[in-house]
Image 1 (cartoon, rainbow, N blue to C red):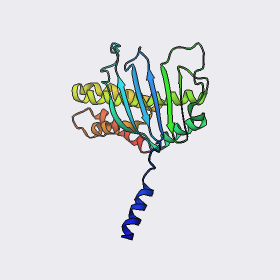
Image 2: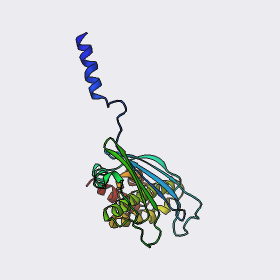
Image 3: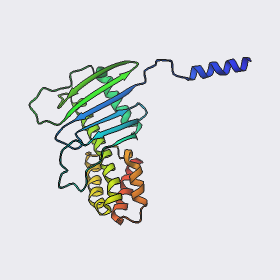
Image 4: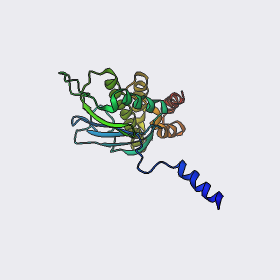
Length: 217
């Protein structure tokens, strides 16, 4: 009987306290002139997250082989990236700051950053921020979204237009190199499929392997 009581006590200690708030960061992006016109990215401290996008009504760019569909999926970011996000939140008073730079700059899309956790909560929204760290954080999050959307396009191309994979993977390699595409690990699944698919171009498989090697660094 005593052992059972001790086991229950240990289990209770291992469980989160009732009502405990789990830290969560959310970025919501909107720009009616783009496709997708709206997306959200949720991130937890361990790198687990979720991405949701809505295409909107903007015509597909003629230079783009295929537009990404609506996306709604769980993702896994690197622990280092997640830590940088939450460190930026802590450094900016849990986002209880005025993010907007109030400058006459081109519209880049509204970024609404939100944080909720046991240590505080806050929200700030901006198009362009004078704070270089907030601006850099937003840029990196937009780049991650771009990676996820490119991965969704790769999935569609593999199914409907395998020849289009050539240009899309070429773009992705260049974007990963210059920072326009970050956290390639979030699309590891489709890259593995491409790397192992003998039915696609050899250079597509090679690019996929190069990108996968980068996720292991």
